Image 1 (cartoon, helix red, strand yellow):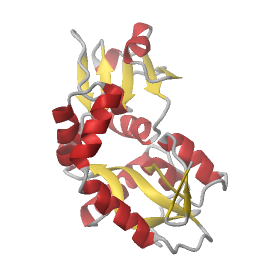
Image 2 (image 1 turned 30 degrees about the vertical axis):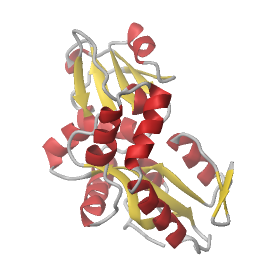
Image 3 (image 1 turned 60 degrees about the vertical axis):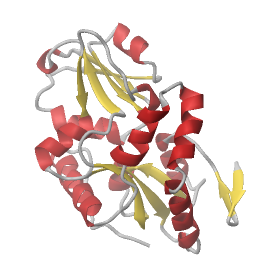
Length: 240
């Protein structure tokens, strides 16, 4: 827990933050895009900031030991829900009936030990390879099918919360973008990933804005999620 710009700052996985925001423990949080879409009547969006990608991203991977139509069991990383929704949007018509889904902690080898395939995200996915397995980058698959940007996470504000710190968050975004090399070096020390891999990811794979392309991509994702009944309703995007 940290203090900055008069705010109490908490950290956690996107799924954890979404639960805390829904439960009233947080006023503002960066949450999985699917969590916003499920509760769009309860939240407003902060403009100009998101976590998005356009084409290959490298940190949302479906790894399969068998052809997609032969997958009988699939392990899901337990930290992100947007990636699970994207997986369903892309492949629900390809996967066989009766597919067994199991949520697990993010350990690729353990996930694949007793399952035909695994959805792997984050640090564990970056640079991942496995001999004999097929690896699908879900952001790349999305872009190839739709030609649209994919929004992984948004900053959501609970309805009724007065927002007086938008500029502080924008300043934090700009500061972060000006220090991507230092962030990459810090993460390289933590994760063991090559610093060049992390620099490429932060500078070239991730988009941090929330402009027209991102909004168009999120609305298209909303429509597809609604079609396969992942979300009950569609709402216009609402901003603070």
